Amino acid sequence: MLQNIRDKLQGTVAKVIIALIAVPFAVFGIDAFFSGSAPDAARVNGEAISESELAQGVELQRRRLLDQAQDNPDPALLDEARLRGPVLDALIDRKLVQQVAEEAGFRVSEAMLNQIILENTSFQDDGKFSQARFQGILASNGMSPSYYKGLLREEILMSQVMSGLAASEFVTEHELREVARITQQSMDVRYLTIPVAASGGGITVPEEQVRKYYDENKTDFRTEEQVSVEYLELKLEDLVKPVSEPDLRREYESRMANFKGVTERHAAHIMLSSLADEQAREKLAALREKSLAGADFAALARENSEDVGSANSGGDLGFSAGDAFPAEFEEALAGLEPGGISEPIQTDSGWHLVKLLEVRVQEAPGFDEMRGAIEKDLQRAAAEPLFVERSEKLADLTFNSDGLSEAAKELDLGIESSGLFGRRGGEGLFADARVIRAAFSKDVLDNAQNSELIEIDSGHAMVLRLEQHQKERQQELADVHDRIADLLRESLIREKVRAEGDEILASMKAGQDVETLARKNGYQWQVVLQYRRGSPELAVEIGNAVFATPRTEAGTGFGSVVLPSGDAVVFKTANFHEGDFAGIPEEQRQVLGNLMQQARGREITAHYQNRLRQVASIERR
Image (cartoon, rainbow, N blue to C red):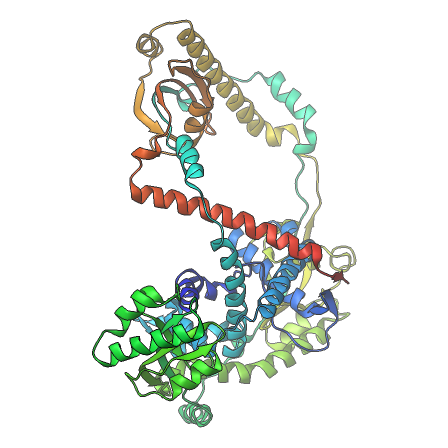
C-alpha cells in the first residue's frame, strides 16, 4: 500500500524537500500556499493561482538564480517580467498534477509527514531529530511548521502521481541488447597531442592587424555605463534584543499547554486482492491461526501478501496516527494490543490481516530543545514592529529630500557607498535586480532624487541616491591595444596548432608510420586499449571524435579534433568491436536497464504533462 511511497520519500524526496525552501522547482515549481483576496494570476480548471503565489514563486526563483550565479549574476535573467512566464507555467503544471492526485483519491497522513520530517537529516543533530533545529530552519526562511507540512504534502502527492507513471514503463530485452551494442562498443586508440601552450614561439602580431581589428570591431570596445550610489540600509537583525529567561520559559509553557502528543500505531498486514471474498477470508483466517500458533507473521506476509509495496518488508506499513489507512483498517488497528492480530477485514484494496507491532506517544520537547527556536521567534516578533516603523520613517524622511543626511541623523544610520557597477549588476547587495533598477531609474539617474524604499526581503530595506555616473564611451586603441594583440596572437597560435595536426593526419592517411611521425615532430603517442564510450581514459571531445570517425572494414580509422583549450589531438583507431550483451555482468545489465527505464519515465511524464495541458481549461490573467 503505502510502503513503496514511503521508501521513495525516505530516500530522494526526504533529502530534497528541505531544499524547496531555497530551490523552488523540485517537481514543477514552488507553490506558496497563500490565501486571501489577492487577484488571480491564472485559473486552472476553475481553480485559482493567485498573484501572491506567483509573486512568491518569482522571488524564490530569483533567489535560486542568485545562489547559482554567486558573484556573477546576470540582471537580465533576474528581471521579474522575464521570470513571471516560466514561473506561472510551472505553477500551472503543478496545479494540474495536484488536481489529478485529488481526483485519484491520493492521501498523505499526518503520520507519514511526521515520519519524513523526523528522518530528514537536515533537521537532525548528532543523528537525532531536533525540534529546535527544525523550527529554527523554518523560521529563518519565513515558514511555520504547518506551512512546511502543506508544502511537503503537495510534493508527496505529486510524487505519487509522477513516480507511478514513470514506474509503469518497462524496457524490453531487445532494446537492452541494442543499447548495449552501441554503449559497449570498444576500440584501440593511439593519439598524440599538439599543445597550444608550447606553440607560440616566434609568433607576433603586426600593428596594422591590431589597428584593422580595432576599426572593424569598435562596438566591442565600449566601456559599460556605471554608477556608484550612497545608501541607507535597515536590517531587522540589527534591531534584535536579548530575551529574558522568564520570558523564554513563559512562552515555552504557553506552547506546551497547547501541545497534544499524538498516539501512533505501527502496523503490519497481509493483503489478498485476487481471490473471491470467501476464499480470501478463509485463507487469511488460516494464516491468522498459524501466526497465533507461533509462525512468524513477517515471514507469512512475505510468502502470501499481495501488497507488492510491503510484502518484501514483512507487511510493515509504518506508523499511523489514525488517518493513514482506510477507516476499517484504522478501526481494526485501534482495537488491538501490541502483538495482536485482527480477524480478516475488508477495505477497498482487498482483504487484510492487521497486526499491531507497537504503540508510541509523541513526547513534548524539553525546554532546552525548544529554547533556540523560541528565542528567535520572540526576538523577531519584538523587532518586526520596530523595523516596520523605522522603514516607514526612512521612506518619509527621504521622500522629496535632496540627500540622505537628515534621515541618517534621525535614524542613527551610517551613509554607505557602493563601488561602481553597471546595468548587469555588481557584488552582494548590488546584484539584486530591484537595487539595480532603482539605481538606473530616471528619478535617481537623471533627476538626482532619492529612490523609493527598496524592500530586499521581509527584514531588509534600503534607500539609495546617485553618487557617481560614468556614461558609456568608446575606448581608444591605446586602451585596448594589448588585449587585441593577445587575442589575435592566440588565434594565430591555435591556427598553427590545427594546421600542424592536419599535416600529421594527412601523412598518417598516406601510410607513413605513426611512431616515426611522432618522433619527427617531437611528440609521443599515447595508447588506450579497448576504449569504450564514456570511459574516463580520454577527454569527452576525443572520445566522441573517435567513435564519429569513419572506419575501414578492418576497423581502422584516422581523425583529429581540436579541444576547447586549443590543443589539437590526432588519433588512429583499430580493433573495433560491437558491444556484446551476453558479456555484460548481470549487475551492469540491471544498472543499464534502470537508466533506460528512468529515461523512458522522464519521457512519458513529459508527454503526460503536455496532455494535461491540452485538455485543461487554463485562463491567464
